[in-house]
Amino acid sequence: MNRIQQLYQLGQSIWLDYIERGMIQDGTLKALVDEGVRGVTSNPTIFQQAIVKSAAYQEDLQRLATTGADAKSIFEALAIADIQAAADVLRPVYDAHGGQDGFVSLEVSPDLAYDTEATVAEARRLHAAVGRPNLMIKVPATKAGIPAIRQLIADGVNVNVTLIFSLERYAEVMAAYIQGLTDRLDAGLPVDAIASVASFFVSRVDVNIDARLERLAAQHPDQAERCRALQGKAAVANAKLAYAQFEQTFVGPAWERLVSAGAHVQRPLWASTSTKNPAYPDLIYIEPLIGPHTVNTMPPQTLEAFKDHGRPALTVRDDLEGARKVLAELAELGISMDEVTAELEAEGVKKFADSFVDLLAAIEERRKALAVI
Image (tube, rainbow, N blue to C red; front, top):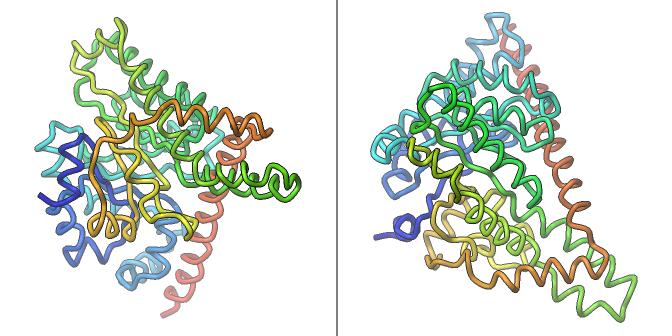
């Protein structure tokens, strides 16, 4: 049993945080699935890297360029084809695990992050266009995204809730999922085939807080040792407390009513798990967050590192008191998690929106060049 399979025995599914047409065509994705990878996630930044850099899209780009389609239509055609192909590779996983694994995620346009109705409409449209039961639509956990999540779950759309940073917003996400299932059950519709994950972002929390701690250490030399001792600690602490919230939420009479109708928990998914600081261990956001009903979506380099030297063990419940202490110490130093997570959410939306703009500009440039060939 390899390390990925050992994680699954501990209750954690590994999804690949990357998609590119060449890896689907040459069998790389199928080989990873055979090793135990159970899903694929995408986002605008991933598609930007794939479509702009890979030669695998050239033929379709040229064909679409001659049809008069605009850049956004071309992107959508390329992305949907990739999502469909990846979903087909993962379909046996989906079928073998009762429709609760084997998913491929496609994100709504990032420029809709603050528009509830437009998010719902686009999610429904993409869900129909892809036409695969093992599709998850990614919806950002903005204030506008919360009611969209409830509506889409009630519609029967599998949702990957993305860009979750704060414990408060995570509580709202779980409530929206439970409310959506309840709406569906109250309408006499089945809830046993609905799946959802809540993508709680990890490493970016340390990137933000470490910089704040470094500034504090420079401003207050007497506190420098304390500040630097907290660097690299906040992200895992935040995620561990999120998991504790998860275990406290999916209990009680309201949830048991849904379980009796076949409902499944909304699994926490650890996102942004590659190490951003080269001074930190390469699996700093993998090994401490292993536990039942979780997903970790790893970029290729992190996945290879775990396959090589990862240590599978139940860890996500370890040292909750230590996690609380980390956040309490940050508060004592004047670092507000509310401020940090609000900043990270806004940055996350902007990053994906900027990647989408850059992607469309690159496609438009290639469209114009190919249209005259």
